[in-house]
Image (tube, rainbow, N blue to C red; front, side, top):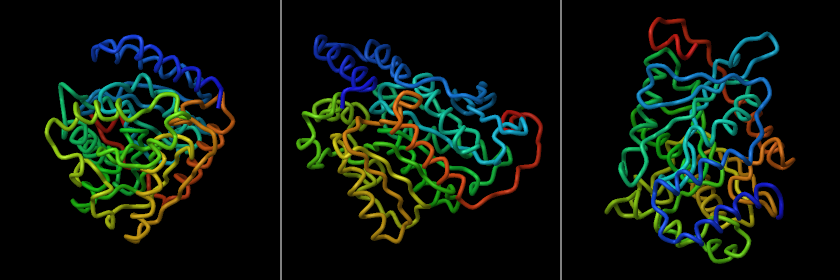
Length: 315
């Protein structure tokens, strides 16, 4: 499991171990370096999402005809980082790789983070961003929600909330998702010596900061305890040797039992969110290619009509 991403993660973990009293700001500065695991994707242009309800960055794939995000589909991505660290900047390149492979536009959202903004701030921000897209002319069926780690939780939870409102997205992609904020998966102990970055004490701390008194088993924060039947198709990916593996396998089992179409990708010997190695790790590139094809195969929607003001930012 020694590769560029493992080395990067081991460096994060060593820095945290040397500085047990590291403050939130310093921790955020450290994890802004997450992007170093990922190369710049080819054929992708970036732009500020003008008018979005929270800061966000467009990652637009340039098609063979020179069209931006030619499929008319938008992938709204929630970055990982335990609801506390990570940003649209640390995950811009990952979203760009995903956009390129899906032939779509990806929107990376800088949702409000804990502890300054505990639950439900981040979830509210993701849902309001989708609402902004719909107001700008995009159909809900043309929007895919994606996220990695804690962002996977947000993406799926947002899909549930949108489905309750009658406007479910076309699908959800969750990479090494952290669904179980009660941290009860057996893989937390089983893979503790194999996962270079994610461990139970860190998860417990971040859950405490995010929940701010909310139960870690509440359906609103822990999809393992939610009614999953309203969900659109899911694509879940994780490593068999990461501590959060069981969050993926348990959610997949429960979603299938509820009648949801679920695609599961489990890779051997990889690290948490191994797709962050895009451009450096073949397994990351292969995974993103499969996900891009899965997104492209979702039901097509017509291009939204051009509109002035905010819609100009999403054409």
